[in-house]
Image (cartoon, rainbow, N blue to C red):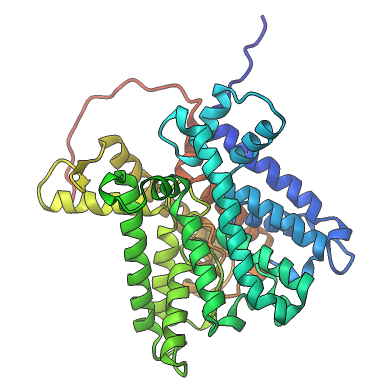
Length: 445
């Protein structure tokens, strides 16, 4: 009897697609011609770096500039761009360039990949994604070139501008500043408004999500016509940016920010409020954060960016829905909503499940690291949430991790980019449905 072919779900195809890109990237990064020393990285280190780039995380076991030559940096940049835009976005773009018809199966995969609502919107949204990405990254590169070209020369300055514009927009956090000092990120530009504000703008635009872009472009300032998703994303992003800036200033004013002028303190606080939401750049020494500053950064990493964006984290809308659910429960209301709109009950359940699963995975990863290596609790949790949220910030312990714990972070970065809930669904979708059990009440709280 002929066996039926195995039909993979959209979540499974997206997960396998990312896995294939990661493995291909790891093999390329192992090549001696991609490394500055002429000696290739080990497979584990190459796999870690490829996972970090494809999952737009930014955690590294070797400084990017010190380890990789131009070819290696170009491979990383391609992995970052593919990971930022999404596997299915790149597949559909290649299909369209080859003049082939985009089928319903591909459209459904794309819809799942970028969190689109309707199948008919996919190709229109794809054009917005590709066109918007090219314009935003191009403008970012031009602005950064104003600073980098006079400092580094024309060719190197242009390359640095392109690399950091794409890395910032894709919320990747990879940098080439190791020529000054390895692992220094953008600390050399802590007082530079052009670099700071350009990178912050790129991070925020990349983190809003492709669906919000389209609404901003088509509806302009007619805010009443925005969807509930766009309103929640914009309100959440503004609150996190302004609130994060103020709280970071309060936590670090007598520590990392002491000795800076007022303008530099505001600039540094703004950057450290924006970057933890999955970007991975830093302009201050994160190893010297106070406990309050470290906790704030972990919370911002936990929240992350928007659905269907270049960033990770549990997602802004997920956290907002959980807070709205809490407020509704306190007020004794059965329905959850905002802006005169009611949320679907299934979305509320998905948000609560996503947060719960995220925390379980993150705390499990933290326990594994602490159980096998004697790191401080804050450093271990910082590293775990950075990996799970595909942020890339580190207090400096990444390169000291054992092979086992590097493997732990590889799994967490992968789950974080695919989405922890989507990843679990991809693994469980072929399980047979269960018959409903009888209802019984328990005591809660």
